[in-house]
Amino acid sequence: MLAAERRRAILRALNSGGAVRVAELAAQLAVSEMTVRRDLDAMDAEDLLRKVHGGAVTRHNRGEEPWSSVKAAQQRAEKAAIADVAAGMVADGVTIAISAGTTTTELARRLRHRPSITVVTNSLTVFDVLTAPSTDGADAPQVYLTGGTRTPSDALVGPIADAALALFRVDATYLGVHGFDPQAGLTSPNIAEAQTNRTLIGIGAQLVVLADHTKYGEIGTNVFAGLGQVDTLIVDDGLADEDRAALAGLVGDVVIAQVAGQS
Image (cartoon, rainbow, N blue to C red; front, top):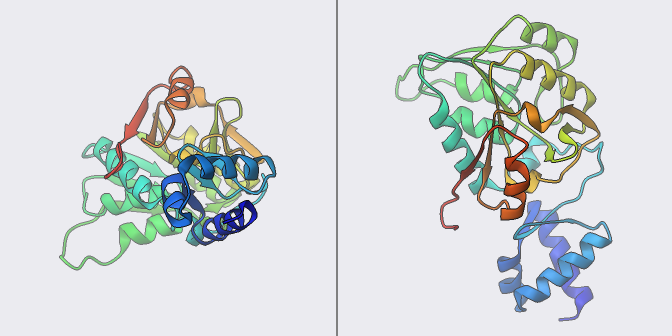
């Protein structure tokens, strides 16, 4: 297979799933992993994709916000592992804020039967998960949903959301992000969502960020926090060792979630 044919196949796979892994591409294309890495390097240089540890993800313009339905299909195992770790950090009796995001929605699924906790959220999907009728009769948390303007990530944002959130003080804010970067910090492609994220951070005694490894180095248009504000960053084990080292001195604590079937 010629290089041009391989790269078209890589783009088809990437457009279908939003992310690709080197090992899977090598098996699919019947070439070595080194060949795939060279292809990804060349395509990254041409801005056709963004290479990450172990594979590649789609490249978005800084102001482009993918729809939540698209993001939900990406890095499912990583998000599940991160959510498992985050849920284990939520103690009985606490009040927490949960932002919009596909990883934070996975966290909400794990808190569905925790009636002793209270959740404040600006996420329609988080609210739906936590308040859906239970088939087994189990009690659910107390949940407060803000108003606001809906974004592609199913977040409610803007002055109404900010005013509602400002009425609360919570033990911890669990925040999903578009991207995190050592220099840029935490970013979003949506200026209103960035401001609402600032409000979410401001009402929390602790800030816990949930982000899979493909978000590392991703920079949206709007910066809403520095990494120094992050008390705990939960990321999956796909994050390269050198990137873990770079983050270790910038956030309070880096917690690595082990993905099933991966080292």
